[in-house]
Length: 189
Image (cartoon, rainbow, N blue to C red):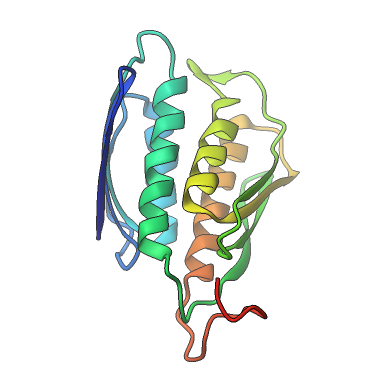
C-alpha cells in the first residue's frame, strides 16, 4: 500500500492505493462526475483507492483534476516500480452503449500519452478537456506509456467512462503476474 499527500495553495490531496486490492474505493474530490470516473478506474483495475481532495473548485476544477492525476500517478509509480514478473504490455477496449475506447499500455518506465478522445463541451459543469490533463498528469507521473483512442461514440458521458474503464482494464492486465521475468530486451525496465 502506498500513501501520499500533496498540499499547495490550490489543492490538498491525500491518496492511498493498493495495486493488490479488490477495487474498493472511497473517493471525494468535490467534483461529482470526476469522482464517478475515478470510482470506475478503481473498480475495473482492481486497485483499492482512497482519494480525498480539497481544491479551489470555486475557481474551476482544473487544479483539482490535474493534481489528483499527479499524486495518483506518483502513487502508482511507487506501487509498480521496480517492476518484475508482470505482463508489462496490455490493451483493452471498453464499450458503453454506442461508445468504444481503446487503451494500450506499456509499463516500461518511459512516459508518453497519445490522447485521441475528441470530446468537447461539458457535462453539467465539468469541462471535458480536463480529462486530457488528468491522463497527462497520471501517465507522466507513473512513468507509463498510454494510448487512449476513441474507436466510436457520440455521448460524452459514455466516451469518458469507456476511457477510464479501458485504462483500468489495460492496467490490470499489464500488472498480471507471470512466472518468468518481465519482457525486456534490455534486461531491465
